[in-house]
Length: 225
Image (cartoon, rainbow, N blue to C red; front, side, top):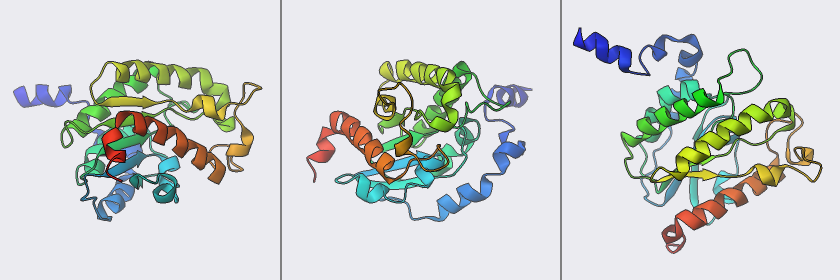
């Protein structure tokens, strides 16, 4: 009876049987096969396709040492199940997360409050292996493809930002202001033809935003250059 009660209180219980979660098992197994970082200076980037497709992360993030371990299409609803396996093998100075697929206009969309809850659960999973490592959450980018849903997306970001502001070793990286033009809409020139993923110029701007926050929160890492 006690075991059944504990299982019912576990937010991850049964997720491995959910087809929308289980379909990413092969992708995560592939990530696990990659070499793990053994350097305390490494910045570990993880999350959805914008991380997975960031082929120039190592050079864009210089002078920081960066590696990327993401899988395309990730949602917090599945990422929360896999995150411990993704991050636990790595020694790192910080963990940076970007997930942008929980509010897309789909029937399975989460509410901003549900996104916050999933974010909190994700942090709890990370803390099992990295109890004191700084964790950074990158604000969801305002993209032309999903601009219709920006109100709900930005509300989820606001809630996460509030939580980060009151939680030790947890930081929110604001980026939206850099991707919205003077007309109040996303700058199309920063995205690929799908109007969803960043192009090379977009990644350069993105990395500048990220490095600016890392500079503020991890000044000791810059001193090790």
